[in-house]
Amino acid sequence: MLQRQNGSIKRLAQTPLSDQIYQNLKWSLTIGEYVPGSELSIRSLAKKMGTSAMPVREALTRLASERLLISATNRSYKVASLEPKRVADQFFVRARLEGIATSLAVPNMTTRQIDQLEELASMMVKDIEKDDNESYIVRNYNFHFSIYEAAGNDELFWTIERLWAQTGPFLAHVVREQDMPQDWQILHTDIAKAIRARDADYAAQLMEKDISWSTHTFQDMDT
Amino acid sequence: MLQRQNGSIKRLAQTPLSDQIYQNLKWSLTIGEYVPGSELSIRSLAKKMGTSAMPVREALTRLASERLLISATNRSYKVASLEPKRVADQFFVRARLEGIATSLAVPNMTTRQIDQLEELASMMVKDIEKDDNESYIVRNYNFHFSIYEAAGNDELFWTIERLWAQTGPFLAHVVREQDMPQDWQILHTDIAKAIRARDADYAAQLMEKDISWSTHTFQDMDT
DNA sequence: GCACACATACTGTGATCACAGTTGTGAGTA
DNA sequence: TACTCACAACTGTGATCACAGTATGTGTGC
Image 1 (tube, rainbow over the protein chains, first blue to last red):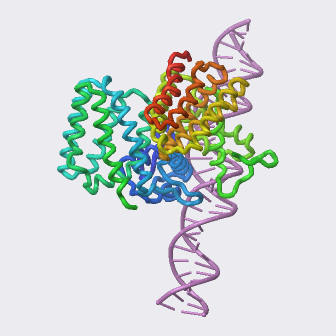
Image 2 (cartoon, helix red, strand yellow):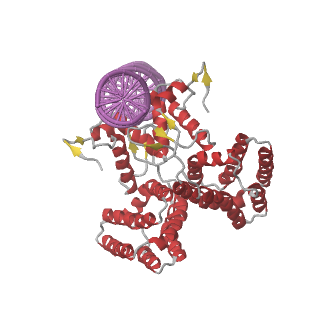
Image 3 (cartoon, each protein chain N blue to C red):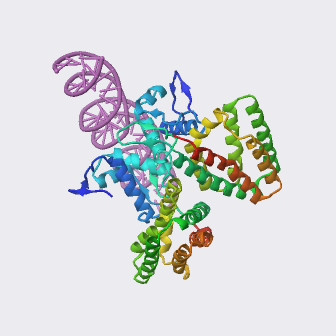
């Protein structure tokens, strides 16, 4: 996160400005703070952050390089807009990778960690009841990534994290529109149960299901 | 590729210099032109390419952001060195993703494309006999990626391509050392046959096998 | 002969400027 | 009213400079 002082970003020891801005924007994408299709320009962002254009420029080129932003030549950077095929492709890869990560994680998770999963799952149900979408999105992130972290494969973790930032803007849109299927909430609890039962295959299967409903959702959507 | 004139890079219409340099370096990593652990500095690369530091700097930050290069704070960029756990993790993800891509590709490939696969496979055997490692590496790339392209999932394709650039330096090392197992060559022909038989599961299984022998190879290696 | 210190030559990072290309708007005309 | 043309306000891109670290190598003192 960025540390602000006098309304502008203060340099943290040893962490380059460009890196802070990069992390900041990546997180914003993940939790869906940017609407699909919205534009980000170097200079206006730099002005908002109180830095020169340089570190912002670096952050944006990095994000574009990871396909988290679209960069047309000589045009401003923008968040991808909802092209059904593209988004469906992304959720397909997500479903597979997150299923794999889950089955890897099952033997590694402690009962304490599984307790926390179940607690998160029940809190998420309450978030939905209270219409607290922002809290729901963050808890959803924590639920999934505490599993993926337990998988113990850095490259897998990072790849999934990247995909979340890529699909974040679309997923947040669905959550905020309350377009989630009724039985979606039960899935999280079931996943925790399957992990507790040390049933790797079933846990992975549920996880794939959790992700891939989105595949169909976006596949049938018009732009 | 970069177009050279008077020993320096000439700007191609519409393609930013930084992008050309980025593509150039990424390909060099993929085919193993850089030894694990070697250092790349902005200014010296810029001098070699005949440009200012700016576009090189952008290319390197992009590569580091995709984890194709390591960037310690305030120290020069470098190609990752061979840490067994890390490399094994990478090949694990590769095996899974390339298996998935293969099974997706099976129903999509034309007989003409499969013919080309078999031709590539037999040429690769000859490359080994002739000790032409560079040609072998490029043909190996073409063999695999013509399959992955047929899978028809852009995100999957890009993710695999990134992983190849990541593992390129290590794989090339093995190829050049001629450390490949005897039965490895037959695998490529078998994969083509399985695709021709439209046996998606078997093709995927063979593909996973093709990748994952490396997992064990590097896992047992000392740094 | 060895160890410590200082100078030098690097490293990435941030800021600033110049440039060319695109977009959008407003005035002038048919 | 509609269309066109020009100008102004953007856009990213490349080059250059200043700076603060770090590693290296050399010379000096013991």
